[in-house]
Amino acid sequence: MAVRRYALGIVGRYPAASLFLLAHLLFAASLAIYGWDRTWLTLGFVELPPHFTDLRTIAAAPEAMARGLDPLVENPTDPLNRPMNYPRIWAYMAQYMHLNVPGLTVVGGAFWLLFIVSVLIVMRVSGPEWRSNRYVLLLALSSASWFPLHQGNNDLLIFFLVVVGLFAFASCKSCSLAMVGLATLLKVYPVVLFPALLSRDNGKTANAGIIGSFAACVGYWIYNISDLNLIRAGNTAHANHSYGFGSLQSIPKVLPSYEGMLWATNARSELVFFYRRLLGLHSKQEAEQGD
Image (cartoon, rainbow, N blue to C red; front, side):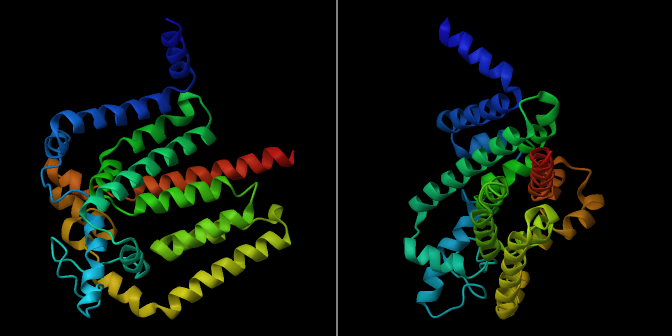
């Protein structure tokens, strides 16, 4: 009875976080009982490539390099024969880790756990009230959040680095900038967060650090502009309509079918929402501390 009262007390204080964790626990139970494919088919994922498909293009990169190929151009051991459309550092990381199929499951599971932690951090910063977290919960359990989990997409790691980096900004600005900088090296697009961190309240030293980090990251990608062009050329957004501007253009064509709605979902919309939510709450927190 004491355990039950304690559990109900936790649910009462943190309803959104409790529902979010319950959904993932039920999903894990379904995976254990019914298996990977059947569970995802129940959620409406009618196309089921190998599990953690996005990670497989990274795992195939070391083999391409061993054959003297550039994995951003040719990646023949990828199950879908896709070039690796991620920054080259991922290929070196996979080579160093000797990433294989069992390792993919471990890394994909780790990405999943990091996503759960990231959402819980956002909910914690938002406050325990239901009205503060209901939209976070809605997006965190939408099909566009399940899609990168199914694929093992490395955006999950980037999301974690950015959320933790922004959460730590008030207490350790250098740690925060390091995490956002690492996220930028791993996936490019978090570079847009540096200007958003600039504020008079930071002080000259902190703002100088932000500008310096931003300039360093931009300089790095200008130096590697050829890799950016290869990454863009290998991007599959135009093929499956799952993200990018192409997904907006595809909505009128695919809207009549549920499958089309699923694949047309913008898988990064949650990340953008969470980033904006965390930035807004961070600014509010700093203003309250200033008062």
